[in-house]
Image 1: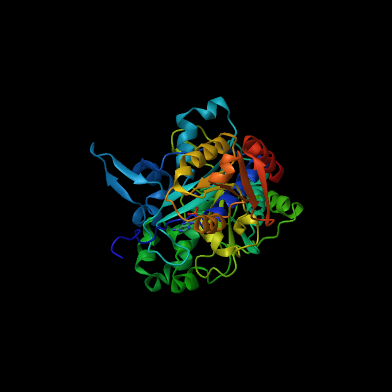
Image 2: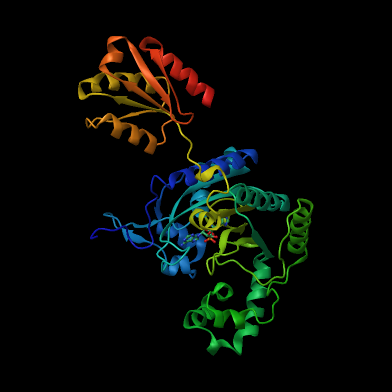
Length: 423
Ligand code: HAM
């Protein structure tokens, strides 16, 4: 095969679509239940948006953005994540002034030029939420609760929630000093990336994936973040809220998030059996991002889940996702001269909202019946010369295995009755 999809991208074939649709239906239903409204932002954004939000020294910005100059020399990127775009849209459309507190839900493709491997792609899909306009710890609890509800409603059998707090800006300054002290003796043993992170943005060593670095960085098995009284109170309230919602978590502190915009609560849901790429959903609070992108001081929190990873972790057939039920009508004709009449009937069915399918290639009746079964039609309607002469049509119910002949002028009405009955 000469032409292939690019490495790290994949086709979602019709046979996979039912799982995707089922997942999308589930997450939309839950987003509505928690009053998060859908937002769709462009796939293309100015590169500076992510430099200013995700952070100049993060892996995403340094190594993973697909970027190019357009004809007017503007630096454009394919969006690597959704949070920054949503904050941009919130400010661009003055939603801070129009509605203040806003709860968004989104679902769509993201792009990162990562080295492809199991569970890590260059084009992947995320769903997520962003609640912008509140500092309340209860919004953190709500977002985490919603995330867990979405993962389990999608059929994820088991996941573990990692929870931590990265504090406020002054807490982070103190933590960076503490980390420098902790690591200064071991600096030369860190990977070359982490050695440069040590000077430029020491927090990025916390999420280095290399085992040798992790062993040094997390040797003390405690969080480098020592929280101020307000951040501690916020974190305690989040933990209490999660306890009362019956959500268990690991808060041993040996966890941090790798995007620069995080403050206070950070979390990650990890699934069993996914190997190194086991984070199915992750998020946290970002209390300075709105301000950093030109808006007023605004509290915000959100998360995003990777759909491909989630589907890898969900056993096929656990939800209604993989059962394709019979539906619609296959109109079969006994000879090619009847195609026009078959087409007319198919159109009438479609106008009534009933799925109709037929063959236009003069296949034998046997081949058409095989095809009707293959496309999982509920009914096959057989139109022949003899039937037409008597103004009737034969309808087979492929699910039940029954067959009857009905007057042609009652066909559409009966079929819409049967289709409504099925729904
Ligand atoms: P993130 O941790 O970069 O956070 O991505 C969230 C999730 O997207 C990951 O847990 C993973 O499931 C999925 N994901 C990320 N990269 C890939 C990839 N290359 N291939 C497949 N799946 C991937 C964010 O994107 C933040 N915007 C989350 C957030 C929202 N924080 C606050 N609000």
